[in-house]
Length: 298
View (tube, rainbow, N blue to C red):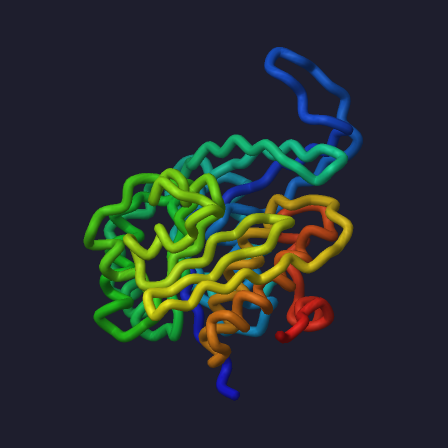
């Protein structure tokens, strides 16, 4: 089987992760129990996750000229991701402040930094998109950039997966280029006005969609009439920060490798479950063997 080529366009952040028994309330100061500084950002996470899941992955993003940027590029490259199209712009890199409680729940504040400068895709960047089997994008970078990448992918016959997070209004040109939409319940309600009670409402936006529900699994729906609930894989949860990124990346790799989409969702669910067993974002993203260990075919 040929190795799937995945291009990821998205954000790169340095994650400053603090663990505490509970998340502090507004105005409250609390002592934490642990701290980690790890590369993150939905784009970088999904690129690393795709590489670990077995894809040949290229990352299109932007980092700052600060020390965080140096570390980000080194760590993403070390994970096996092609960073030849990773821009370095003057100023600060993106930073995410992540607080995680004892149940693995989190609260996250992101300052975009260099990610906001990822505009006007170059000919080389567009060629990278066009050469891929699957393009994966999110919404932590300018929507105009996501749209340009998706349009180029559609023109080249590259499948487009949009993880519409954080949720925002999507231009018709972008929606017309999306093959598969991946959202959680909050994002689904903002985009389509419905959640778990009517996942098919997402099909007003896209021909295929996956609605993720955390510990309650995921729904896959398409305009051919398919509507399948895939249960979550049961594991002990340590940190759910990067679970959605592991899921989306594995979904792209599985689909690119020729799995039907329902089976790709099952494999992606195993990736999400493998991820939540560890603390941190990119450091918790699973290797392919860890995904296969938890994967349960129908």
